[in-house]
Image 1: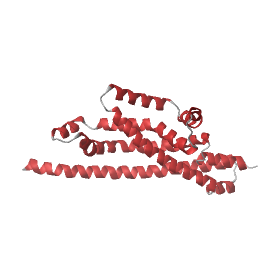
Image 2: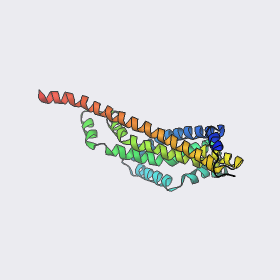
Image 3: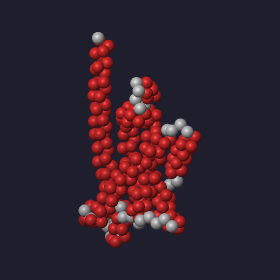
Image 4: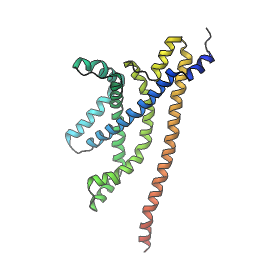
Length: 238
């Protein structure tokens, strides 16, 4: 048997099993990252409340889920919870597990982004009579979002790679689809090469999209800043 077979490689590139696994990897990444952003943002907002219980909850939540491996969390959800009478399907366990494992990292990103906005802006907004909810929505969040976009975009790559862990609980994503194929034809090198190309392709496309969004985001904030400073300049000149 030769070490490399080009016919097997090209066949694997369009193999329905691998393409189906690739699609599962993509939608699982996007869905769990979106859920993690919502959950992480909520946890971060709770952690910003100046109270002993909320600060303790935030620190404990982040410490627990960052200290335990995602693989352990997935296996616990799928294999240990049934012993407590809670049964999750493979898809449910995968979504919940990946969401929980990613949410503390998102919470830290959101918390640090909100903290990076100068406190003076909050105080100035309160001084002119704006309500806290209005301040967060129109003053704090837009500026924090600009800071948070790059690290949140990088989390896509982490989550994309973490999806391979759900193969342990028998969910057929890209890696498990590749593994199933190698067990059928024993051509490991070609199959793993195809999987590597698809992982690399997905991260490359995302990186290009992220860079384009960041450039557009920067131009938008620059234009907004010019619009805001023009009335001030006219007032000062008058």
